[in-house]
Each structure stands twice: as C-alpha cells, then as structure tokens.
Amino acid sequence: MPSKLPDCFHWVEDEAGRQRLFLHNIEVLEVRQQRGGWVVQVHLNDSQLPAPMVAVRSPAAGMRWGARWSKLRAPQLAALVAGRRHEPRQTCP
Image (cartoon, rainbow, N blue to C red):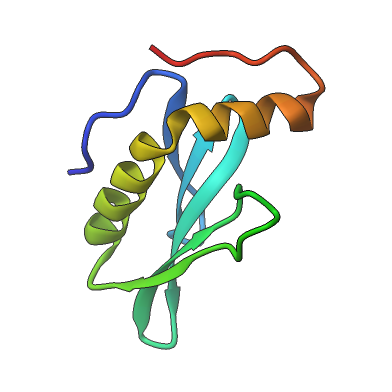
C-alpha cells in the first residue's frame, strides 16, 4: 500500500491496468507495464529537469515510489498545477 498522501492527491486505476496519480485533477505520474516489467513515468515535472522514469518490481512498488516522490515535492507540484490551471496556488494539508 502506498504511503499516505494529502487529500488533494488521488490514485485512479484505468482500464489498461495503469495506476495514475492526480493532484487536483492534473496527472502527476503513472505506474504502467512496459516490456514485461513495470515503470513509473512522471508527467508533472519542472521543465528544466528531465522527467524521471523508474523501473519497479510491481504496481504496488511503483505506487509506493510515486507516493514518496510526490510527498517530498508536494509544494512544488502544487505550484506547477496552479501554473497549468492559471489559478492562485493551492496548498495541500
């Protein structure tokens, strides 16, 4: 089970079996199958740095990695989401 994230984050499993993490309805990352393994692909990232793609053992491991990564960067991710939505920055508790 992934670590506890603030309520503004939520996981969605789509019909293809991908686990997708959203922050205020903007996709942050996804855990998906690739060539017989599993990867975490980050979609919401500072454009100055390359978006991480990390190989993981399982969907659960990918969700744990994604939750930790997102939790550490919650303020920065909230600022990126606000910029994409052209709104004032929202905070997560």
